[in-house]
Amino acid sequence: MRIIKENLRQYGIYIALVLVAILFQFLTNGVMFRPANITNLVLQNSYILILAIGMTLVIVTGRIDLSVGSVVALAGAVSGVFIVNLGMPVWITIIAVVLMGVVVGAWQGFWIAYRNIPFFVVTLAGMMLFRGLTMIILDGQMIGPFPTSFQIMAAGFVPDFLHIGLTSLNTTAVIVCVVITILFIVFEIRKRIVSKKFEAEILPLPFFVAKLIFITIAINLFAYWFGNSNGIPTIMVVLGALVIAYSYMSNKTVMGRHIYATGGNPKTSDLSGINTKRVVFWVYVNMAVLASLAGMVFTARLNAAMPRAGTGFELQAIAAAFIGGASPYGGVGKVVGAITGAMIVGIINNGMSIMGVSVSAQQVITGLVLLAAVIFDVLSKNRKEKQTAKAEAETE
Image (tube, rainbow, N blue to C red; front, top):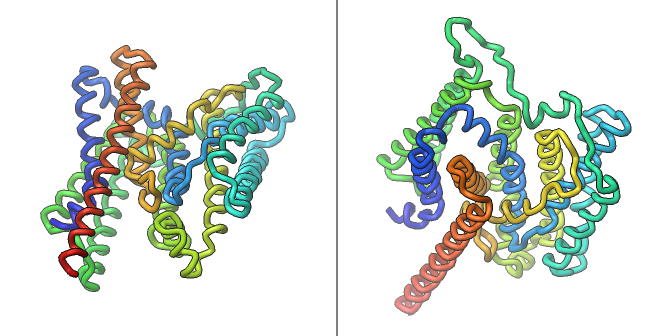
């Protein structure tokens, strides 16, 4: 039971997601779980989910990035000029916008990491600088429409390659979800066997089985939802690849361990030989690249580049990371948790929109949820510190 108590915040956020979804299923008279609404929910929140991944890593280092909303707008503006005004190919535009993100991240990362300028000042300045550049590029005008080849990244669906013809279901979506379920179960069992072999801490068997059942049900719900709609959204494939790649990087690589070490204890990390300046630099580069990707997705979904695009996105990404378990003190946070936090906020906003609740009220609810998450984190940290101090006193 100790491992469950130590990871209460991690497991609690998944329980909260389920409870919130079920609550709004009843409050919206069954509209929440309709296949069309689930697809719309994924598409609506895709760019926030992308931003939340990068923001989590920034927060893990003990910092934040206030400029991502403006970078989203700048990426959309550059995409509009290149594709609509200049007629450049979509693939060249995507590469150019990603490279722009590298430059933006390197600019901010340099001042924060190597010149010790406070991250709040640098990213606040970046928020104003990149928003201003967006307005100059667009000259206050909206650019659009975009070609279908660009829109497909945000509004497209994976073709039903495996359609059988005996049912109206999207066969490809169903088969993909079933394969993912099998792979997940095999991977988790293999992981448990290896952990047990090396005498590492593992979940008690009943909880492990419950975890497998819960996630299997969740995946097959998506099989039902996507199978009864247009299929798997293209952006879902992109998000899946990002979650897998960043989860692996943060949990299984040296770079990932360095990121957590930098946020957990910077002085000790420096003394142990970790180049914390380089870690912070690349975390900000990564954040800007993901913000550029999110900007293209957002622009593709709207089918237009606008001067005010991305306003407030940085706050939504920060909220998703904190609600998903990231600590404001740094050193704690997971990519999957951030995705879960973003989906909680998305479900709340989507559900209240269906119910006809005003945007102002939605912001109030989101703010309260964020405050509750941070309060829970602070109280948990204080309790752990007291328990550690008590244990040390008893040892002495």
